Length: 74
Image (cartoon, rainbow, N blue to C red):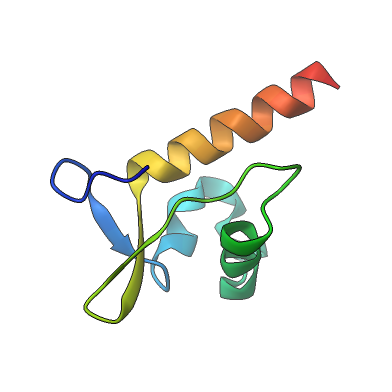
């Protein structure tokens, strides 16, 4: 869960660039899909503040680590 007081919030529209070398291959719709349905059961954490959707750098790290762990386990 995102702690809005301790984590660095990023607008979901800007969060694509936080995915390092893969950001050129990502689309905003992918982030919404990861938020709604997830990737192999792992969902990207987001919060809505003042009508805008945000995630955090920490949430992206948690998401990527969980996805990598699932890949390694399979």
